[in-house]
Length: 308
Length: 308
Image (tube, rainbow over all chains, first blue to last red; front, side, top):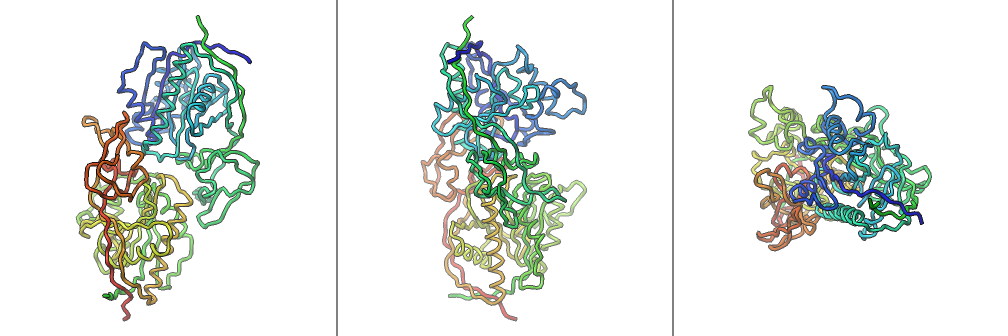
């Protein structure tokens, strides 16, 4: 099997509060900031609240969704007095942890998110990246509950989320948790995921060889909106009880997907696919009731650190 | 057993969106508004969105919590240009469905709420009221899952919530549901509760006799706040996993109640009481981690309508 060598991954950023009402990352970052980090160890970790005004307001964002501001186009456009707060903050974060795509960027940017969907612990990647896929494989091997890998195939220039600023990027998404609420079980799961990620980096930097193999991943296929009133745009149905909380369970043609408020069932008509982000609070305004994915096995090579 | 007669209950208001991000009531009221109501039947039902701007913003409130604006003091104070939006709206609703404490008030005001707490279907009463306690008893007899009655003993002049405007008032509180999300299972439960309430009113008005008996109720004892950093006021712990989702299960001295973000357990030190509203999103800012209640059996008399 192929063996690929990578430079050491010594600078890591862990971000929370990119969405100000997703509280697990907020409290985890604050806790990490209180601890004395070993800056001279093999991994230097910086923990940062990405959107402090949104955290203070306990809202997803102030002017616009920060986690849609990190495309090359938005990061290279000049700021003006009328730029939304989050776009200005995105430029700051890009200066602190990037610039995106540069040699100066942190080696790994790990961004902490919550969802109201029953997605358990999910790891979101924006490209085929052997480093982050190996981290996913490591977490899957160390955690007994399901750890799903979601792969969004978007060219890096168009990736809009904060983790794209790092040389390698990983979003840790855990649910279900209401936004504006912190649950201890979800906090414990996030803590385990972050600790294992840092443990992997330590092992990698100190010479461990990580065997290749296969990683199961869900690759984004398309999004489905709620049924809506054509005049008002209001939704006219909720996710059907048979789909609710069943993220990552294969959806077959004919399966119920929506129940209208007048109690009629709407059935799924497409090809068999895997739903995720089912009934995510923040996606109502984005006109997304759920995403659909294909399930694939990705082959990854054996990797280890490149010795100088 | 005592037999008490009451005048017919012909005018009913069903309100949703008093908190703009509690979506079950929002969509139920909109659906009720679409249906043709039988205004000439024994019960005339008006369905209204209590806080439309907050609904549009998908926030609990715009300026201040509408459901704290209905004390006699706030309803009698003159409005000014600087009055918060919700206080002005409270005066409108009091004019439409009250005035509170008057003969002109609707016979029953039923206000629909959601909570992030695992409270199932709970019915909140602000006084010992034979009518609403009989409605509770009826719902308990018709619904197989638990229907909890919560009684807050507050003098009617100081009751701050919308349902106080009616001659009789009932808040239907269902969870767990994240604010800003509508779940079909919770919607179905709310629909059942509203339909059964209207069914009870029809039966009452057409002469049914409702036998007295006992109703189990949880009476408010006190509120417990989160542990907080004395300097910043930030919470330093989450509800402990052993308490989370265990609303209405007796809390004993020594039981864990909080888990700090540095992973220390805080134990309960008071007398045995029943927790409810455990980890309600909107109560973080009110400095309430959960409420505690005593459990009591309330004796209620046989009732029926007073014939003219």
